[in-house]
Length: 196
Image (cartoon, rainbow, N blue to C red; front, side, top):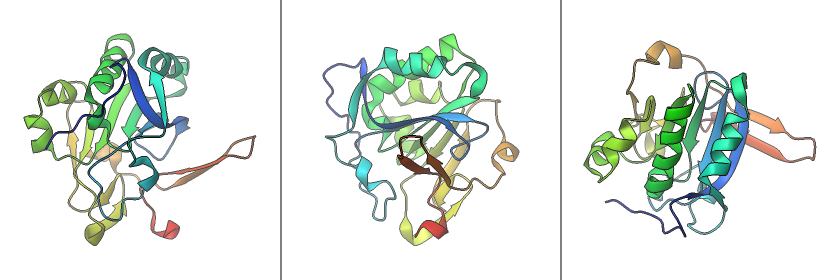
């Protein structure tokens, strides 16, 4: 059930992309880290470029943490998505621990694993202790809803601390299109119907 990607050292996370400010990936303005690599291979996955275990870029946890803290009060929290964050459990835990110890930022994690699968993982409870909101479960294209922060109706939202409640997520999270000065375009959000 549990798969962990090999990385040269647990001080690095294989990252597909980092967005400094997003409105579409959780409450408030958030920094978003999309990890590279996922073996779950959900049919209809809307991040297929993030599935290969190769690719992306190995980024030092120290550098990621510095990028996040350099944003100061311009963000409310961070969101981890992918790919599959839990398949890089060691580096993810190291980053989340630093964020918990040194900042007041909230932490939201998207994973294809269910809450029960995470609870059974060797370090699953360590992860759960560091997360405010967990969006859990494999994407199921036959049950697609693409509403709020869930892509399919089988996915579940878990409020693991008192920081947020269901009303905090009861807003229409829609896709956002970010056009950068150099011409690069990023589209993020929960698989909106108009993008199909």
